[in-house]
Length: 362
Image 1 (cartoon, rainbow, N blue to C red):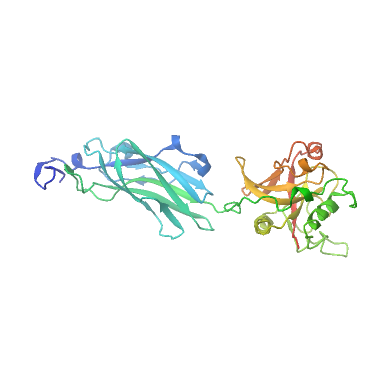
Image 2: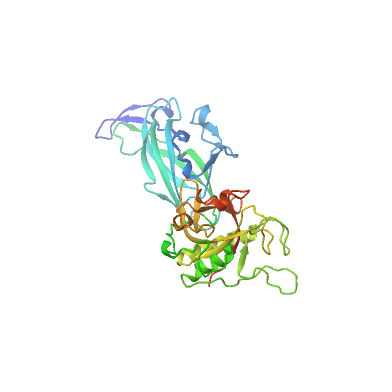
């Protein structure tokens, strides 16, 4: 039974007539108002959780929220509320635990805190896994043993919960890579000695820094039929081609993006084809222009690939830091508008580029 003791001694001055009065019974609630949406998407849960009988009816049964995230590190705010009106012990210990035991998922910082009613806490969780995973963050309360006045009996009572759904995608690990080709080596429209064609300009852009594509041909066959070359990742099609159905090519998207990340990290540029809505097409019946990917980064819009565009002869525009194609794993697309000063983009029907194919570099 809960009791009040003489400060500095073990002498009992008073025993509470009921268990609850001298207990610390908090309810840990997710603080949605102070949640930073950069850490993921919050939604109502589907599975109810029932707390012990000591909680007031308002708290005893609830459905924990679910956070879907692709972030390696999440910071979540919570409020500590009074879970039982009869409780007069305002503070105690709250233990923070994960529902899984995995060395690649851990709580950063203290896993046991001194909690007080009507206060707030922030919990940080680090996730290192390279696959999807689900788990709960659970909160357990107990009275603090060093309280000189009030000593409770309840231990390890579940007092809060949130579900975490970590979704691993090809953009989960995304580095910032500055342009791997210096601006001084930009190859733009009407560059002397090169045939006036975006494909040839893109090839020359690679050659300027000692590279080329593994194959200049899209089609693997020479007999009039079509088969995708082994050194090309096809990401998007507007027509059925070579056994592939029109639309996004989900099986090629992840492989292609992983190739881009690995290659750019090694300091190697990559030539890609894009769809812009023009009428001129290549063997894939979709690609109308070729550009060169030179870097990576992240901004408020998302995670992007930086490109040099030979559609202009102006190096400031062709190498603009605004030439960004955003990687969108949820829809299996890489797309973007580029610098608004590129007249070629502005004069196309789509007014944006959609990456259609990735050509491996050698």
